[in-house]
Length: 192
Image (cartoon, rainbow, N blue to C red; front, side):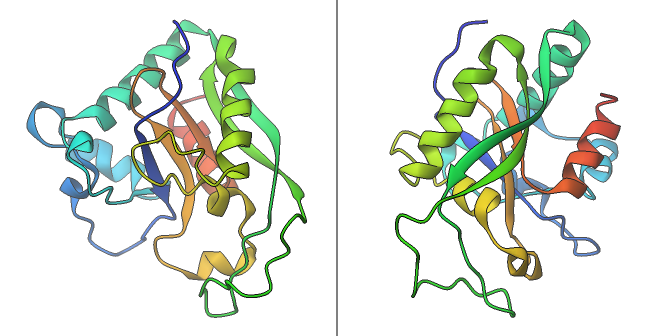
């Protein structure tokens, strides 16, 4: 499979728990609906953020998940943690983002889980690094939230809708997750 830089990246957020979710909010309309059983399996691992763009409304989310299952079945995948460097993203004790007192130029290194075609691992790490370094690199359809997902402090977990990763739904499907609980759920669900 040829590598192509991601354009459509579905933001994955902290699971909502008992909150009723709108299944249509992540673009599973027309022929690409996720059935109730699949939705129940995913609801404790992550929630899908509303992307606000028509490109996400044509069933690409379930198709990308199906392609990840096919990739798993092919055994031609990388599943593991990689290191990425970036600026810390700080939240106060109530989960509100702090914009003042940013440490511009101060970088930290964090591990993020990725599941992808093994031939694309280094390219995806490079894409992630550029994405967080340039705060989106200007090449995706919507804000991916990768910098927030990977570099947020522990107070970000107090927010409903905290970004915890992303699912590339076009061209070259892959997933990245920065939340350990979601990684464990993904590994169990995908039997990796």
